[in-house]
Length: 78
Image: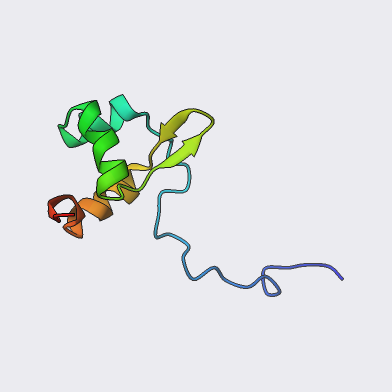
């Protein structure tokens, strides 16, 4: 069966995120947020900052972190 655009289901999430957003390091996300890198590690552990472990490194998507901040998660007490 030949696939055409008509046969491919539309992705409802298309266009909601940056398609080729690069992964940021702890230092880069700290600079993005204006925070100390040690604070980033604490937020990962205590406040569930959205982070992805790649080997021994933590990586971040700025859009996920920005959404987390806008949702007020950084200000929550735990």
